[in-house]
View 1 (cartoon, rainbow, N blue to C red):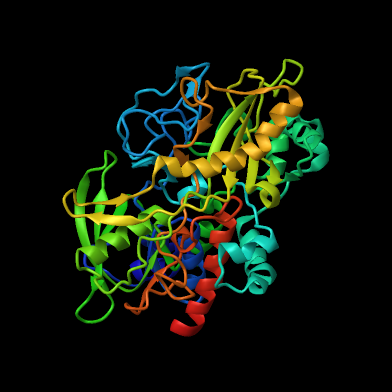
View 2 (view 1 turned 30 degrees about the vertical axis):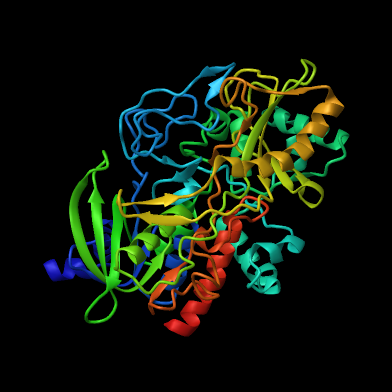
Length: 521
């Protein structure tokens, strides 16, 4: 009876599911190990699986598939709890003052969803969990203008990207654009309409920006027929319903192949050539307070580094400096940039209210890239009260690049970014907002990022570079000194994409993995 029972399709599926849910075993051997579950890693896992390769994905964050005591998987922006931050005891929100008062609060130390990783002069915000940055970003899915592409990835054929890989990425991510008629009428985008009116009055192009939110779901939120998500202040610490994060797109497809398994709360600490071929990979299994529960050693035929710009760069710099991978070239750790991120707020007149109900999903931007080197997304302030404020996250053509280096004294990797390097970003953003303030007779808000502080110039949401394509790697992400090692994430892109970067990271990963499957497997 036992054998017959196992032969039923349902039992076989059950066995497969049980195997997929089990974390990687000490001593395992895997054909492909993907370090990280963000955009690049998810693309690699799906395409490798479709090509018949068994893949194991390693993720240092949690799986984010189990509701908390409040019945929700993710907590709200306005009432953060332990789920909000990665191993912090106090929140560190990008907009952390209101009316000049600090609004950060104490929380329990936990493997929460948003990492505010601090380096000299800059805090880098990163998603922690299965799905990486897709869990915590605003979902703005922007393909750069064709004429800007040569400056972003000079060694990549633009025709291939725009004819094949950008369309493939947009389809895989589920990208869509807001219905303009609904935009014009809904209360939740009043803040964006004020942004449009003021941009256009000052002569700036205003553009709708594609996103990976389910726009039909948002319409239902506004109508009150479904559980609110974007209209309930959910964004920074995860979105419970409408957002098409990687969990719902690439990762779901990858798991459906039956060839992809994921180990959450696992962190790769070492990769080195194995005696019998392939690579020896050392992995710490973490508990939810960040401690190491157990350490495992596995062997992988191929390893794909996809831990994000910071994660991949730090790991590779350490492995080169400490002798695990000494032959990595000297470009490792270089070419890191912040995508020119800088934030500001403006105080509108009383006749220009921005609305007490604000969708957390930005859908519009002001484009002054050609003339002033800045693209500004019109961002929400989802406090639930009328603020008369307009908030913007600008992406600028900041030329400054930093380097990751190994600090033997501390046993850590440092980043030599300097706070003064944000000044070009401020100057570029001012080409938009000085003009709007002048035209509207308005002023900058000085109470959102500190006391009398206009610019939030200490952060980035968009870390890029550190293992630059065609420099640290070959033109497809191969670490040529070590056959079978690849970089396939945002660390390949040298510091700037002119817009929100995740579509470009995804499209580049689609390009690279197609070549790798065709030639290396």
